[in-house]
Length: 60
Length: 205
Image (cartoon, rainbow over all chains, first blue to last red; front, top):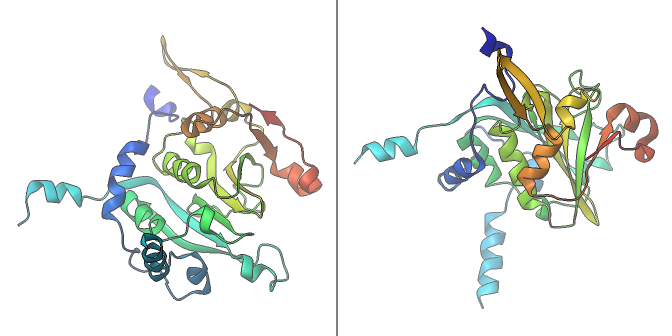
């Protein structure tokens, strides 16, 4: 019972930064259900075409 | 072709809390009359994989337009002073020169969603604010007056008879996670509401 009283710092699903970073590479696609058409998405999403274009230009 | 290691790779990692990304669109701001009317929830996630699926596809602070505010708050807490959970809270803020906050923003997000803060229950969320000359990251907490959770280097707690633990507060841990050595300040929302930019730090560490 004592353990339940001290929720601070001991409970919950914890993941270290290093562990979370190892997952990053396998998650490249936007989550299902993400609204790509909203005006906000337009402002916020990485434009893959422009990145490719930029990379091409830089490599020359 | 399915072997045990592939199965492990695709196992999802549920987070302790669901989190929502919110965006305040600078291009919408000028068209809107009331402050706060342009802020909108983008997507809610509850696994580490979903977090990365979003993070890897959205612009990082250095690439966001000037004026943008990008928030990551616990689900059902709105990044507004008026939100009942935030109303009595405040925020720790760190300023960076323009284009220099990307890594610290990511580390702040990972520390929050990975529940690395000892007093994580006190956290509402974090925001990065992109301005012409600087980017600011702030962590919003629930009870501004709860100095114990925000400020001390170590908080000693009795777990059970003769068992003590010492925990670092939110502000101190945040600086440690970011490897940030300058002093940081905590402003009460209540002060910010009344005094705007004249609001003074109530805590400095």
